[in-house]
Length: 341
Image (cartoon, rainbow, N blue to C red; front, side, top):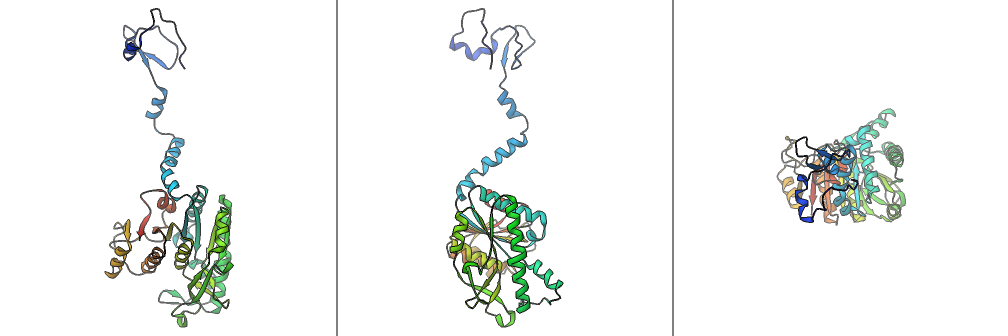
């Protein structure tokens, strides 16, 4: 604040303030006032706040700017449920795993209600190999006999699930680990080609009752894609399918599938041909034309089925990109392909 100073002349009328710079005034030692060396001496008042704006932004200012820009997205999704299917490269890399966990915790802390669904194919293969159990696939799906199903259940509902719960807990939000068999969350049935695949199942029914209290308490459910049928027989179910059916049963705002690709591509050989947004009609046309093929087909079908059951939007995003979840939810740019109804 500038100290009051008695001027040698009568008080200046308000109309003279615009020409204040031409006013002669004795030299001041106040650092906020600078004088030109020319005669007559003129007064220049420097606004220190404007000086701060001209200077390069500090790290603190950058963080504040980012938070301010995130406000519309936080307001849009606050209180809404989002279901995230976690797998692929994001599961193999410790740094990407930490990125996903931190994103989930941040989303929870700003008022979203995330649900995490996971598989664990690479970890299953590792333990089958350690136990000298042969790994077989049929049409890209794991053949699951009695011994294999036992290992699948131990690895997914045990090691992988509790490992994720521990990581989320340490990051600052309480997590609750479940599999489809807990609380009859998911009831399974044999897959159509069960005679060749063994205990590979499909989702027969979802009862999300057990999840409501977990979500209402501000915790993050972490769900392994293992479920039992009416007789108690366990089945291994595709994690994308489980995530999609849970999203529909929960009335989720968004379903997000983490993958090892950028998203849906107009040209599968050109990673720069990413389709940022498309509707159901558009993806069906791309599948009919053969533009969408291979492992992307079941993911797209999962998204289409979820949308048809009331999920607002679905996204297939690149799990290899650090913080891809935040990019998808908290920015207009996104991190893959968003499919709408």
